[in-house]
Image (cartoon, rainbow, N blue to C red; front, side, top):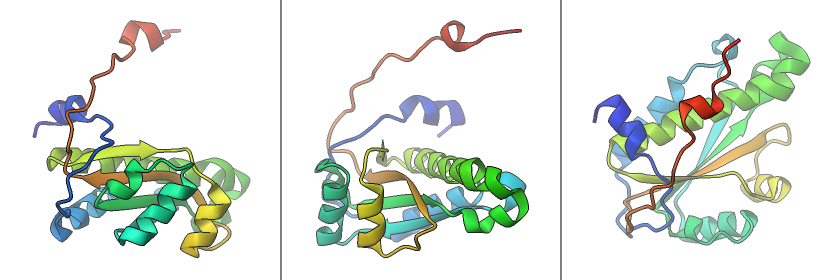
Length: 171
């Protein structure tokens, strides 16, 4: 798929077929995340893959009962890990750069999934502490996003986007 076609075809999918996502596709998605730019190339992010049915249901519960999450064959949770860059960037690494690194990595993963014909949904509403405790991740990690991945069982609704003229401010 050509790059701008990938961007045009990326939509939030909240209904998935039961078909599992092939391990090779998950590996390519993770490889795309690893190629994302990051502050100082320190890649201050971590990813947790969840595909177990019971664990997906728990993630959905911690995501404010958004049950479509449990329906997705695979879930990637992106965490900022400031320990990877705070030594170099101090407070800015802690409060901003690690969050940016995790965000960009998730965006790359999302676009890679779209390029392979998979549907995704970026979820940002969740109980941070509940997710961290349930997944047993270090206390310094900050959850940034949940990315559901699977074969769409729906045709997503195309929503209008802002025009460039609406958001661009030239000075």
